[in-house]
Length: 126
Image 1: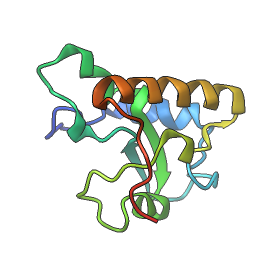
Image 2 (image 1 turned 120 degrees about the vertical axis):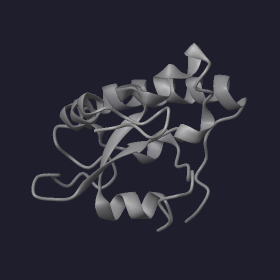
Image 3 (image 1 turned 90 degrees about the vertical axis):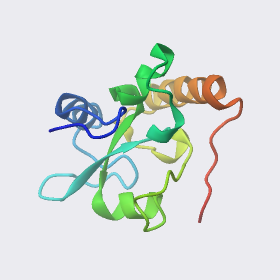
Image 4 (image 1 turned 90 degrees about the horizontal axis):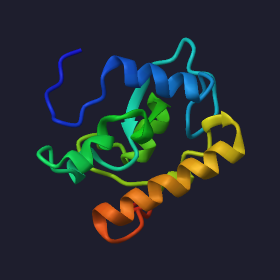
């Protein structure tokens, strides 16, 4: 896969996210087998500065969730070109059924968002 934007995910990162989620969509928890899936930036890729090494995590598995196409549309409000933000808590299957790892991931991403933006991410559409 060729990367057109500085924070695009590699194929390896996409696969790591899918494995971390036990092959489930991070939003609805349905199996991603036999479905079109999307790798989604929890903290939007537009948020970082490609020249700042402290922002490199935006392209790693830390910031990547695998979503079914329907949930990806929902997260973006049916407009995939916007930098729509749903808080990390929204991706309740980020670690499949493992709630402890999910909560640790949520805390980590919220901390990173605070450092990047000075505020926590919040859902911007219904």
